[in-house]
Image 1 (tube, rainbow over the protein chains, first blue to last red):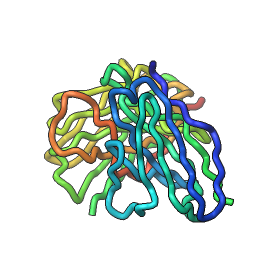
Image 2: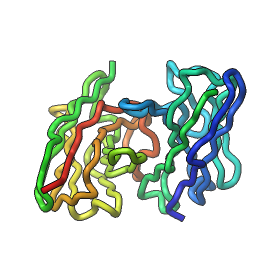
Image 3: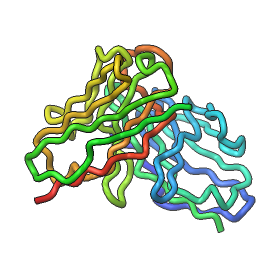
Image 4: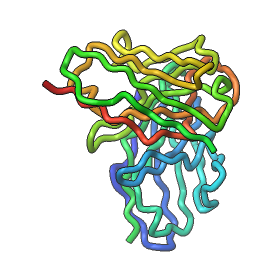
Length: 108
Length: 125
């Protein structure tokens, strides 16, 4: 398959835990990365190579994977975490890169 | 501090051409693969193209293959995207992005740890 599928929107109460998922056949072979994008800004990498956080990313962000599904978990969501989140990975051929359609996270 | 600064965007007519540049600093440019990622207004991210650190390997999305050419000048720490036969659907903010993985690989980088601020390309008559 040449697609990564994400739920369009997810909401979480302030301080609670939320999981954002990404599904695709290529995730059985390749790790997902996750990006946070706020309005008018460039994306920011929050998780790569399954569960590695770049420096400066809070440890409340974590990644996991099982079968054809990758997940981004935010433990104790903060107001500043409200943003669009995108997953990405290589496609099944390994010669192209895919992005999921994005998930809009609302922190209530 | 890693910095990526895109330039070259603007308004172009359908069928026209444009060359984007991305000036990089703060890291050993030739040691990292680089990519272009675009975002149409109000839409999600779309990978466009990637190039290995040496420039010896290039990769393209099917939507731009044969029309766009990615290249790099490691002596100038600059990444390029030559865009020909532009279409309305190419209208987007174009970001250059750096791979977090050191060295040359035989496949396009699957992650992007630094992004530029983006340059807007508008294809319209």
